[in-house]
Image (cartoon, rainbow, N blue to C red):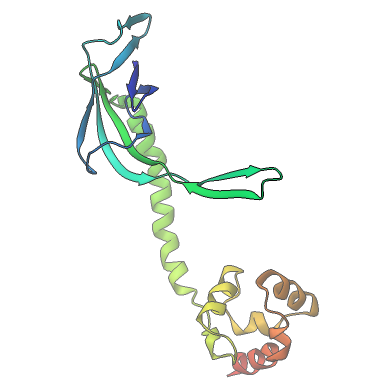
Length: 205
């Protein structure tokens, strides 16, 4: 089922569950709104057209009030030494349609076969996740912040590349250093602060 409603001088085609931004209304977030200017309601092959409106209404919930993106307005007059720049942000109210003509969306119940299949598919994933959890906890990395020049932010960037042990840094090749410098924008920090040398000593201890 759908409806065509009019608000703020504009027309909108809506169905239950739609979220739309309309011209600003004097309402608060969470309020219930009734749109009574319903021009048309369609339900399958059945269509009702108002003259100009129908006696039915569309119900909605207010999600938020806000302001749209700024529009730049420039007025320029050639050879008049005149140029004016202004901006405008249009206020709006965001609505979620909850019912059309008194009818809300009907929730479809999952069939027994589909529900059983979903549970069956979810069971192996849950078991695998449960088994993988201890392994993940057991594999702990080194404290990379012990390397001079490596702080919490850099540690996070290195872990994002899968680098979390001293031995990995100690095994860096020239190509690895160049690649990581470019990817993380370190600007030669690895060689300047001698990360490889420091990591080698820390890996031995």
